[in-house]
Image (cartoon, rainbow, N blue to C red; front, side):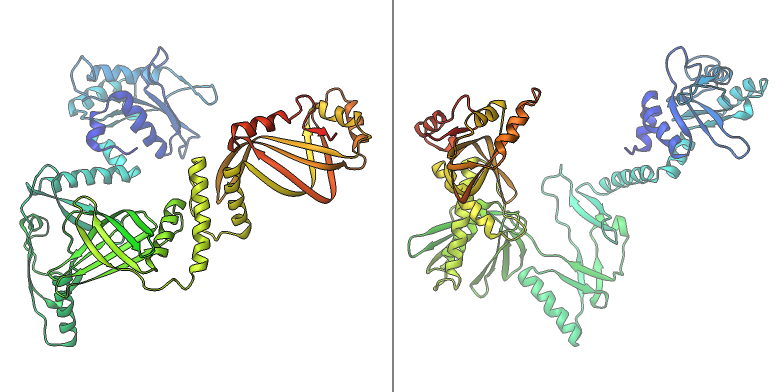
Length: 560
């Protein structure tokens, strides 16, 4: 993760090694960078590594790391004397290569401090190393050098530091407001917002002196500006119509007392708090449907008109309400999008749409105050696709029932619902209501233990079989959701063993290690499999079905 310069300066030595230096050395193309610090084998080396050189296959490096200022003092922690001794140790004793296991001698040493390395310290250490010819093979990195390398090899860290410093500047530019920067897209956007700790900051005032000449373009821009004042709609004023712009003090500190702007864009005028509304249709035939919860926010407001919408909500319906005070008229628009919506909300929307097309009334009420915001009439004629709409409502009623009964979330798919999926939805809903299902089949493939095979072989002369199929946890997929139906028991009669099955099973039984067997039963012309889902039967019915499962005959029984 990136760190700021100050965070690196304040790090303890172990974090400096692990979180900053080792990643940096790897980025600088050093190989086999390992922390060597601690224990009797350290011998002055905190990090060891190597790098291929032009005239040498590899040059081995040792790194001496300090998270404190290195001084020129003769004694003490991070003193010149202590560091000199550590460098001498690093050169004098080889280290064991963690990759090859070979002993490696150090050819170069880097002394790194996240803070200052004083001039006196460098001179003292160099003087100490000169007698052993180690001075030229030792390099010093102080905090400035370390940050310069971070800036080069980890530019994101450097830019993060700049952003933090910039934010500090922007936070202190005004006692009531702060500046925020957004770099998304092709440009840089600077916004002014009130400081969270300041209650009721004074309003920001921007002075504009505009001039609209009697040209086609000028009069069109005047019309747009007047529409902004009346409705709150956004408007853009090009430079040619700007005579003067007076900035508030907080922006003057950033831009200066500027007089030239390429354009001024005035966004939608927004005011007031959101309204928690109940949008309700009451049809004359007694049906009442509500779209709830609907949170209406002011999207734009002017002297003559205000616009509300819930488009910021993640709901399958969008309400747009425009109220014009001057004309004493309102316009209400609904848009519906079922994709990805939960089936309960999708059903709510379908029922609302059906009720809305019937004669009746429409109301929007503030649920907090009880104030009625809208009271008008709904449609005077039936929907032209009313029959199709009823089918969709019934389908989603089944889906809502399945979701509620099994506590499994079901969402409307992005693709269309196929005819087979519709059939399966109704089938599952019926299972949950009755605990029963009936399927047309032509055969049954039964798997079971050795006892199953023995029973079939011992009763090989029987031509009329009744089979029981048990599934301990049946799951059916509905629109991508796994619906758990629990334990099921299937039963069918009048089945015959497939030709040759007895001989196959008799041969398989000779293998004493075999534990699973399979038999195939068929019914020419087909038959019905009656299936019972015990979790959705009454307790009495479930107990009766359980009793019909033979305890020792595998998964089938012989009809009597």
